[in-house]
Image (cartoon, rainbow, N blue to C red; front, top):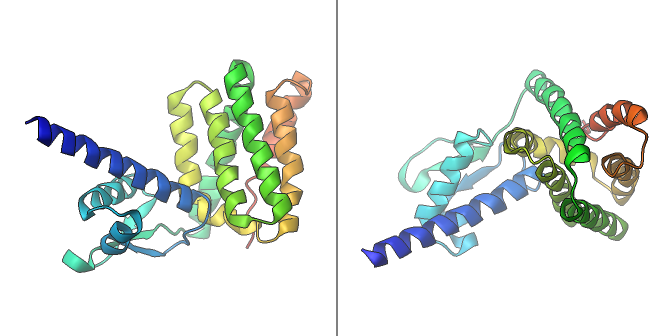
Length: 221
């Protein structure tokens, strides 16, 4: 019985790791809309059996980050979700509101620990931008926003905001195609940090916070 429990715990941990890595890849736009993922290839990539891979894929299908593909057995697969222009417009509209709320709550509930995490994340984004490392920049950008969500100290708000980021990641990533694109985005991110850290007057911050939420979500065609 103890052995069975140990194996179950290990399998769950592996599924968590696979879920987290796939979410990061999707949110960072490293996996394209409609891109096919299959259990066999993912099992090889993560050095795991197909059971935790299947569990991780099931979780992401439930979150609608992935959609079920065709086939069964060895041909079973899922794909990164894709959306119409109307659907994306509605998601970005909702996401804009969530981002503004997260910035507001983070500013109100900031601690030394969450402040340090946010500053570390924005510094990593800037380093990646300066080096022209797009993949690292995209991942650092997701970490930056995740740190802001954590600083809200509201798990429901954080979960909703995170879900929107997962689902829109491939589309948001299109705006960061060059080193210049990445460098240009650092300034509005820094301004957002200043608002959260209380370096911007409250009245001005309310207006800027919403504008920044809109600016940081603009996608390239």
